[in-house]
Length: 316
Image (cartoon, rainbow, N blue to C red):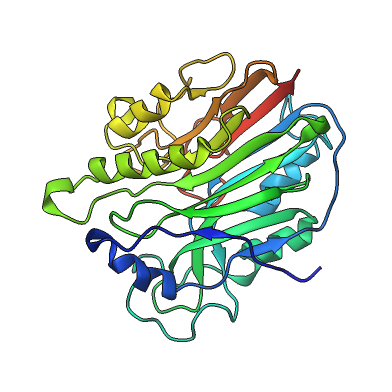
């Protein structure tokens, strides 16, 4: 099936947001591909991962998960992946950059790590929305949802502009006929002004924008898979805003058993799977951090600088 697009909810270009139009013009089109129509199976297996501009071995890890390679996640179960920093390169990206772009790691992606190539190889449905261009390279990176289930009512939403353009992707899946709204998001690591050097105020605005998007479906259970980039960890206002809105790690709620998901120094707890409105729909949601090496050593984790999070969700 040829790829299509899906709606982008743009922010108004207020004075503080004028640069966002330049970032928006410097990326390619969103991508919607439907390659499978699975609906059955028990439970749901969910992966959340920042794949570091496509360098993580996403295809290999998904293959292991879907083959039952991790305890508690049965082979062939309904599957969804909430991906941050997915890499894409195609002719919809402008041939020349207008200067509004990410300047770091701009030339390290490759065709086999392209999110569209991976979706086609694994025969998974895809919704991808670019956030920013990768330097001068004719490629971009952004948030994505890959799933063995149909992805309905998908939207992409620009979050408040802080350091770089950020776009969250949302869609509805229905494992066993029970609708769940899933969201993939990536908040800024820093701010663009001296007053918000560490990005704390910017991330709070972005978290509030994500919550505004979610409140359109208050009766539906929601799962957020996100790199929240929390400099102050769970003390940060952005995290508290999500908790105050009813989001928690897993069902029943619990604190993570690990202290970091960012693998390089400084080791920080940046990546989260958060669940809200689950009563009557989700019986249990167990979330774990995946380690490539038992001692959590080595330079990277499955090729990325972030640990993946894997959740097994039991539905009522």
